[in-house]
Image (cartoon, rainbow, N blue to C red; front, side, top):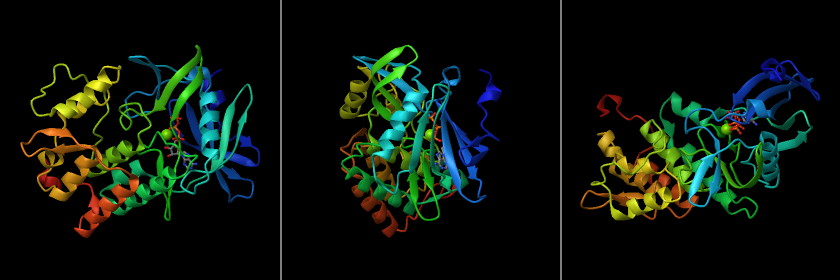
Length: 332
Ligand SMILES: Nc1ncnc2c1ncn2[C@@H]1O[C@H](COP(=O)(O)OP(=O)(O)OP(=O)(O)O)[C@@H](O)[C@H]1O
Ligand SMILES: [Mg+2]
């Protein structure tokens, strides 16, 4: 199959004409379609055929990991199977914060789903525009709290700046992660994680930590984790035993995405105008704290999304209303 054949722009799908490409990930393309009535819009997510599936470069991209005992390796899942599994999970959860999926259609040639078209900006677009209101994260934390109380939710598993859409009136989550068994082009993979390591460094469906990493990124202007690291060779004199143990527990089973946290600079080391309350919040959202002796160590962190929402409201009470550059000229 040649590339041009996979371009859906101009095609008619049901009553919709495909107008443009909205996004491309490792495993799929997402298109915008317009109904024959000229008004109604829908989004179409199309699974890439085998020959197009490829992990996009960088650990800020969604990738698939084969989880074996003591070892982790990347693989390419069957994109159609993945799309069907993701769509099925979203369709099983009734919540206004999750994108609503009309149907999934799979033929031998192509697998796609039709879903509501969310008219909004991604969290990444908003972060790139400038300081983000704390209120956005309060809303996000509230959505996640509600979802976490929903028996059928379990996890989103891929909260990244690209998978959170913010509209005039609400937040919509798209593109969930996946844990479990899946087909690949080389047979069935019994245990996999399809997620983004920069936000899920332990390759576990830990949405609470992902939210902390997102808030950190909004406040500090760049993502904290990305590339895999290795504690061997790092200067470990600034970190406490509990934090080191947390990282080693990951490294011992082949997970190296959390390791760069050992070389973390605290917000106040990077930004002279960092308010103490925001510094403490940001570290706690990553389950970290600075001990009285100045050592960076592990902390139990926030117990729930609701607790994060509450702590963000406390920041607002202290006139911290935006996350992002406060006085750029004071950057370290
Ligand atoms: N229903 C939707 N309405 C509007 N925009 C959407 C919708 N779904 C996705 N998008 C946009 O398209 C982008 C890509 O979609 P999505 O995250 O679902 O797939 P992906 O990351 O490209 O796929 P994958 O990583 O699974 O290959 C999103 O970042 C978002 O900006
Ligand atoms: Mg995505």
